[in-house]
Structures are given as C-alpha cells and as structure tokens.
Amino acid sequence: MHRALEVLAAATRLGLTSFGGPVAHLGYFRQEYVERRRWVNEQTYVDLVALCQFLPGPASSQVGIAIGILRAGLLGGLAAWIGFTLPSALALVLFALGIRDLDLSSAGWLHGLKVAAVAVVAQAVWGMARTLCPDRERATIAMLAAVVLTAWSTAGTQVLVIVVAGFVGWRLLRDSTSLAVPDVRAPIGRRLGAVALVVFFALLVCLPVGRYLAPRSWIAVFDSFYRAGALVFGGGHVVLPLLQAEVVPPGWVSNEQFLAGYGAAQAVPGPLFTFAAYLGAVMNGWAGAALALGAIFLPAFLLVVGALPFWEVLRTRVSFQAALRGINAAVVGLLLSALYHPVWTSAIHAPADFALALASFGLLSFWRIPPWLVVAFAAAGGSAIATLR
Image (cartoon, rainbow, N blue to C red; front, side):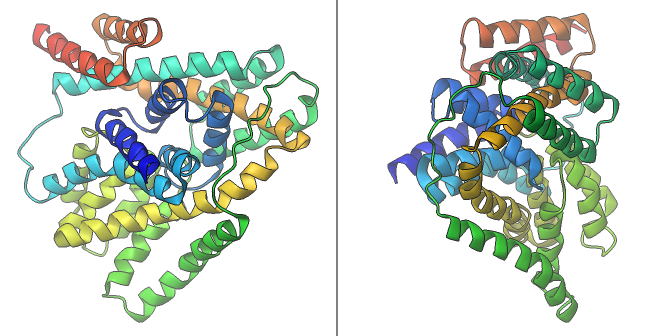
C-alpha cells in the first residue's frame, strides 16, 4: 500500500504539470521515473515505450500504468492512472458543467507551457539517444525513422517504422554491444495476463451485441468509448475523429459542444483521452463522465496487464533483444520527429519563444531543476512575452 500511495503522489504531480501532449508526457515520465526516482532504468523505460507504441490506446498513459505495475503491482498501475488522469478529467468536467466563459486561446501562460514541452522533449531525445544510439548502425536507424515519420506523420506509419526497425535489428544488430537487460519482473502472472487479453477481446465483441439489443441504454455509450480506446493507434489527437463520429451523429453532443471541449482540452495537462470525461459530462453529468472515462481507458489497462508478463519473458531472449535494439533506435527517431511536429511547430513562432525554450532546456539539463519548476518558469515567461508583444 505504501508503494501504491507513492506512485499515486508521483503520478498526480505529473498529472498537474505534464503539458504538451503524449510525446512531452514521455519526457516528463523519463525525468520523474528514470532520472529522479530511479524506479526503472533507461533500458527498461524505452522498452516499455516501444511496447506501448505497439498497443492501441493512449501510449503515454500506458507507459505510466506499466511503470506503476512494476513498482507496486496492479494497485500501483491503478494509482498511476488515477494520478495522471484525474486532474485534467476534473477540469474538463467542470468546464462541461458550466465554466465556458474563459477564453484561453491567446493566454500567454498557455503558450509558455507549450514552450516548456519543447525543452522537455528535447532533453528526452538527447538523453535517450546517448544511451540507445551509441553506434553508427543504431544512429542511422534513428535518423531514417525521423526522416520517414517527419515526411509521413500518421499512426500507421509509426507502427510500420517500428516493425521494420525491429526486423532490421533482428537481422543486423545481434553482435552489437548492448546494455545488460535488467531483471525486472512484472508482479503479475501469465495466467492473469491471458485473462486480461481475453476480457479485452470479449468486450470488443460483446458490447456491440449488447448495444444492438438495448440501443438506448448505457451499454451504447460504454461501447462507443470502449471501441474508441481499443481501436486507435497513436493516441492523442488520432482519437478525436473517432469520438466525433461516435457522439455527434447520434445527437449525444452537438458539434459546437464537441469543438468547445476540444479547445478546452488543449489547455489542461495530462492525456488528451480525458476529453471523454468532458463528453460524458455533457451527456449525463458526473455519472456520464465517469462512465465515458472508464470505458475509454479500460482497453489500455487490459492491454498493459495482458502484455507485461509476456514482454518480460520475450525481452530476455537474444533474438528479441536484437529486435529491441532496432525498435528502441526507431523510438528515438519517433521522438525526434515529434519534437519538430507538433511540439516545435506549435510553440516556437518568434526568437523570444526560442530563447525561452533554450533557457528551459538549460535549467532541465544542466541545472537539474525539477520539471514542475521549469513549467512554472516557462508559463511566467510566456506571460511576459505576451505582455511585451
């Protein structure tokens, strides 16, 4: 229980300060869980990132859940999800219930938070590249992955690049020097993992049947949000078209309400999947928010619980380690591509923005200032820049 509460405290702090989208979240996680708390080492962390890139759903939330499970079992995974998700979910529910008169589109502090994300992601790319791309072969894989993903930035391309990089690693990187794989065992058995995977697929098949039999019940709402969480690769903004197709045509939410909530979701920290809480609240208040939020994140939890026991066995095999070297290099390339778009392109519009990002990067990398203080510094800097313009 003590470890679960420790996970909850760390995840809640991340949930309050992690602005900038899923790629930035991975940077914040690395700062908190790898560098500050040392709950996992660099190799285990990036292996988890690679695993979650393969799974449908919100990749950054899944990484957090996985680290929580490794730290404190299933209760730790639940604590990691609650802490990281609840702050933004509560903010969006309150917005849905009536706080709609705040125009944040031109807020200087919000722009400063986007600039902070540039520094966090840049530091994560730099640190991970030094560890995971120490030779010419892996550096080349990372650069090629970044080039391809910058030119064709889709969820399908991400999965394809990771698969190809894994094949290249399996074929060519067996003899390269690598870090010893740490003996980190997931505190859940393969039987429980298999049950979680069975439940995941059973719900995917059975919920549409229940919806057909009771089209006006809560099952229909649960089915819509569960499928959105279960069938989307890439997470974040990729889920928005699926959600719009599920909630607007039936008349559950108007298009104007949908767009207003999407705008509010850009101004809160944490995962964009918490947008589901806003939609549920518009439909049916607090009960609707809880139903939609639980439904959209349930697939992520089931998949992580189902994958972790088998992932731990696979990653100790020589051939799989070779494939992981290629995959991990591709993940560095993916982060490098995302550093340009959407992180850089959405935040750096003038020399003053670049100066603020550079100062934030220096505070993180050389002065070792905690990320939440850097976020506060960047928010204040963004407000100052907006005032001077």
